[in-house]
Amino acid sequence: MFASRASAARDFERSQISAVGTCKTARGQEFEIEYRDISQGGCRVDDLVGGMSLGAHVSLFIEGTGPIRAEVAWRQGDRVGLEFLQLLPDRVYRHLIRQEWDLARRAPLLDGRVYPVRRII
Image (cartoon, rainbow, N blue to C red):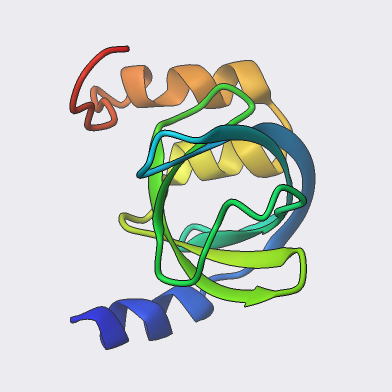
C-alpha cells in the first residue's frame, strides 16, 4: 500500500507557496518551518533545525491549519519532502494555494470534517 500511495502523491500538481507554520516530531520537538511548495499529497519544506529524519512521522501546522500528519519521504541537505498520510481535502488545498489562511483554517469545519486529534494539549 505504501508504494501506491507514494506514487500517487507525485502525480498531484504542485503549487509554489510561501507559508510559515510549525512541525512537531513524534518525540515532541516542535519548531517553525517555511513551506515552499504543496500538493494534495505532500509538500516541500526547509528544515534548518535538522529535526526531520528520513521515514519519521511528523505533524504539520501550515498557517494555523492542522494537524496534518506526514512522513519524511526524502531529504537533500536542509530541503525535505513530506508525504501526507491522508490527502488534503480539496477545499483546504485550494485555500492554501491562494494564501487564504483564515478560510483554510475554517474549511474542515465547513466541510463537516475535522482533522483527527489524539489528544488536546
